[in-house]
Structure formats: C-alpha cells, structure tokens
Length: 265
Ligand code: ADP
Ligand code: MG
Image (tube, rainbow, N blue to C red):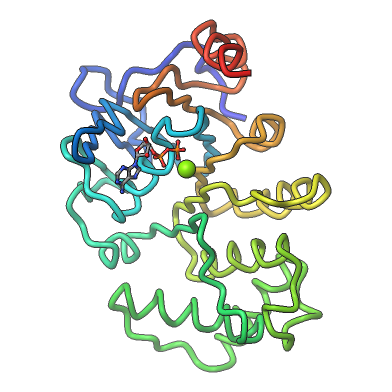
C-alpha cells in the first residue's frame, strides 16, 4: 500500500504542485470533446512505479476515454500525457508500445482458433515488431517466455488447446498474459473481470499481484470490493472530471465520492 497520501492530490502538472519523485504516468488537464459532448473535462491521472491504481466512476463518466487517451487510441482535445519522463501526448500507439505501455480493452483480441501457446507467441512477436525492435531472441528463449506466461496465469496445462476451449474468465486471463508478455512498464486493464464469476474475480486478483514487482497497473472496475482489495490508490471520475484521487482509505472517507455512489445506488 502507498502511504502518507491522505489528502487529495493536485493535478500533476500545470497547477504548481511538483510530485516528490516523477510518477511513471502523469495525464494532466485532459479534455476530450466528441462533437457536442465533452467526455473529459480537465481529468487527470497520476501513477507511480509499481503502483496499482483503480479508475472508478459511474457509467459514461469517461473512464474508458481517459484510458484510451493514455493508450493512444484517442488523442486528447487538450491536455498532456507524460510517461516515464517523456511527453507522449501525440505519440503513436507504436511509440507508446516501445516506451513500455501495454493495454487490454473490453474487446478481446484473443484469436479463438489458435492455441493458447500461439496466442501468446503472436502477442509477443506482434508487440515487439510494433515497437520497431528487432526480434533477436532465440526460439528457446521465446518458448520459455510463452510457457512462463501460461504458467503464471495457470494455463500451462492447456497450452496446446484452442483458445475457444477456455471459459470466458480464462480467456480474460489469456488476454492479460498476452498484454504482459512483452514486459511492459504499465498495464492498462479496462473492466477485465466483466462477466466473471466471484471465484474467477478472486483468482484474477491473485494472478495480478506478482506483476507489481516490475509493472504498474491502471484498472477500470465496477466491483468496488475487488478494486479496494488490489489497488493502492484510486481516482474517481464523474461526468468527465476527477471527483477525488488518493489512497483507498482517503477515497473511502471522501464525502464527494460517497455522494456520487449514494446518488446512483
Ligand atoms: P465510461 O467508460 O466511464 O463508461 P466512456 O469513456 O466510455 O465512459 O464515455 C464517456 C462519454 O463519452 C459517454 O457519454 C460516451 O457516450 C461518450 N463517448 C465515448 N466514446 C465516444 C466516441 N467515440 N464518440 C462519441 N461519444 C463517445
Ligand atoms: Mg468504459
């Protein structure tokens, strides 16, 4: 758990409060307009290295749009995104991948006819070539990496089966393993436990824990118990703006946040 942050944080840049150490991710003053609709209105998101950060808020509050602005699937109308010391506001998805960003969105990219093994292998190779790196690893190293990911996600005994044979929850795990295969510095997960059973959610929390050693996480989730259990800090969006951001304890005690969730309960 992060400690010592009991007050709401100021946005990371442009409003005068420098963070003690530079965060891994700092999205600041993000505005995103779709036609007549302002989906994000000055939103911000700050994530430290090795932090698990939950992004919560009612439906339509702008969570997916903010994730997409970080991932490069949408360009902010105004605002800035810094990642690992660099301004990536206008960087292409390929440049972001090269910098160490990895994402998994609501729509799965698992190829159902391919084996689990080949899905991971493909993800590893596709993201490596997307990042413009020459793939110099030997076949043995690649094999070890693929099997290591399958083991980490408890799918190794099914490596040769087609992905279509997996349950919905297991397909989600495979998808997360694919996103993690290229060893990103930040993983973005938008509602990864959608459609999972309670038990599958619990296991998902367990499966994510070890990645903390080398990767930060931003996760969008509706299940507040789940997010409280796995995250260090939370950012709460409402109607495109940040209501509050801070430790789980801070958010739980936040009157503004209580008001939004009670209003919609
Ligand atoms: P959340 O993920 O919190 O449910 P979204 O970020 O998906 O919210 O959406 C925020 C608002 O922006 C919603 O009103 C949604 O309809 C709108 N929106 C999202 N993407 C688009 C788009 N590509 N074009 C037009 N409106 C969009
Ligand atoms: Mg969404």
